[in-house]
Amino acid sequence: MADKLFSDFQLGPFRLSSRIVMAPMTRSRAEGNLPNARMATYYGLRATAGLIITEGTAPSANGLGYSRIPGVYTAAQVAGWRDVTEAVHARGGRIFVQLMHTGRISHPLNMPAGARIVAPSAVAAAGQMWTDQEGLQPHPVPEALTAAEVQSTIGEFVAAARLAMEAGFDGVELHGANGYLIEQFLNPASNGRTDAYGGSIGNRSRFLLETAAQVAAAIGKEHVGIRLSPYGVYNDQPLYDAIDETYAYLAAELSRAGIAYLHLSTSADPEVQAPIRNLYATIREAFAGPIILCGNYDRDRAEAELQGGLADLVAFGRPFVANPDLPERLRTGAELAVPDHTTFFAGGDKGYLDYPVLEAQETY
Image (cartoon, rainbow, N blue to C red; front, side, top):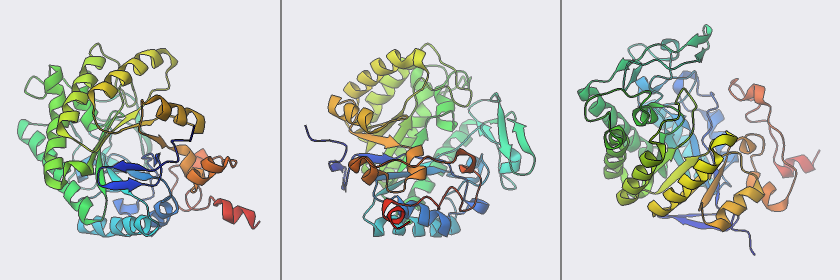
């Protein structure tokens, strides 16, 4: 049986060279929150992926929770991203930008003057946030968004999506996973609202669905993907009784919306593997579009998911850090380089631009 992993795939209007996706990974190289030449080189080197999904990118100043992450809400940021998209397209790649509003996962030291830490409710996340100025700091209590601010925040996503298309991206991925703003609305532990955006499954899902609908109306549904992480507990998002019902509802609603794809990030917790597999089967049945699965996959496990029909594409994260030519290494069975974890968020070229491709290694 031929490997599906290396077969091409039609994603809306785009013919992808393989079913290998480069997963979104924060790399903290955007000094001043601006995409730069270093980033253009980094993404260009990885353009042989069937699809690249960028690191989380803020749709507004309020979404800049981490040190040195990029945004896509100013003219300078659009110009920087245009260099990135041109580098990827020059090598025949496709690239979506991940729009990530961090919500309560933030700290004032990581934000520009005038920005605010906002969330569905004034509930601080447990844990700490890295700041370049003062090291680890506890997450502050966020400001609860007013009804009017909910609408303006949705508008920020829409404006950022339009700018992303101006910058040359093939589409946008809305980050509804990993405990950031969109998931903060989904989870009752971080959403204590009593208005139309809190309480029932439909209400807690409303922010995501309205954002998706308005972004799709602005740039075309074929250019909009969404990432979700059911059973994930990252960034203080505890499990709750209605997880399966919530994500089954979302899958059905997003299928009706006709978005480009659904990107599911798995949990590493062995105790929830059975519920996750059952839920993914439910999502597969409810969502008519392509599904990307992500979560510590190797070649064999990725191929099994594709052959089994649970996924249409598989995303690889950390292997792409140290292996710019990961698709070719997977295809040929070449040894994979091991990334240096200490450089993941350190800034500079080390651990970012100094991992060689196979051809370069052969000359040593």
